[in-house]
Image (tube, rainbow over all chains, first blue to last red; front, top):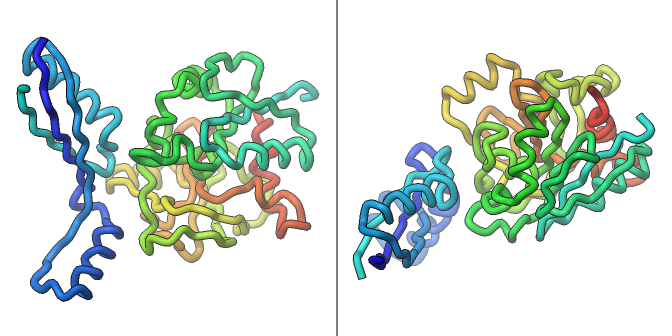
Length: 84
Length: 221
């Protein structure tokens, strides 16, 4: 069995309004940060997972992303995978 | 109809289950039974309400974890049999997350948790959920949510409009919902999801009775 560290990034789709991102952008400007053109907030999920090779682990992570981690009606996801 | 029983689902974090039961039993004399979310036996209930609240603490997304409960798995067959399912607030979020209804509920545009009475236009009579509201085209119901902004892509919206699946629209959109949508049904009409709380509008002493007919229509065939 191989063990992998996976980082999943879940983001609201570009077409979906992100009010929390807008609020954070507004606060960033109040803080004095200049030049912020866009600020959007997503989630990062860290998973340690075992499997027989990278392909099998990718299948499991795809399932988790499609069915649980992201709601693909409003969110996109991508992930990176590192063998431990 | 004497033995007609409405199952009121209880998840960890549900908080409107007792209100729904009170409204059905106390105001409408309809028998109810609490259904713990780990149960998958729906054989002795004739309709189901998924009440409001914060199932599983709204972790990950509202309704995202509740969807994997044994009861929601069993709901597929129940819905296919034509029996009625009403999802209120968090119940609506669970119905979209689990694919019984299209679209998704996301954070309110102004990020506020909104507690208010809202006016709603009855758009479609699909499923008969609002048929008996004294010919009224507009009703007033309370809302209480932080993530009630209905979102769907343009193809889905067209389908909702073309097939008359939009049940309720806000008169003054409080949360930024697409097309002012407050509630939708499935194509068959036996599943209704809505953000407003009909169970909180069943007695004049608490501000109105416009919720009665929606709850009463749970007993329709």
